[in-house]
Length: 101
Image 1 (cartoon, rainbow, N blue to C red):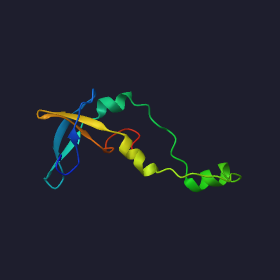
Image 2: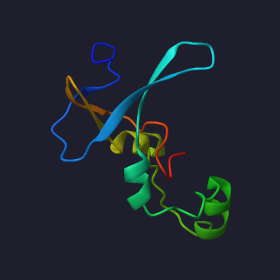
Image 3: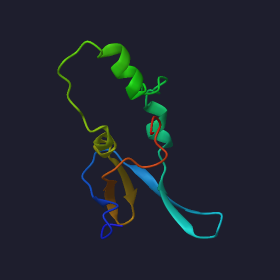
């Protein structure tokens, strides 16, 4: 996974255990157990507003606008997993996190 760029060594003070679970087709899936992290995460009950609605109602009279790359926000959330081989982190948001898109 390191060679493929999926994860990298980490020095994070937080970690979750790694599990290997079988898929329906018999192959194995590697996943982090984020139940403890999810238990202390405040849930986001409000969805992200539609961009069209946001621009129409809040920015209709503005003359200067800037664009932000919201796609990069997923790369700001890093999770670490602990294995017998060491501590590793995923550079992008992983499935299973509360409030993940």
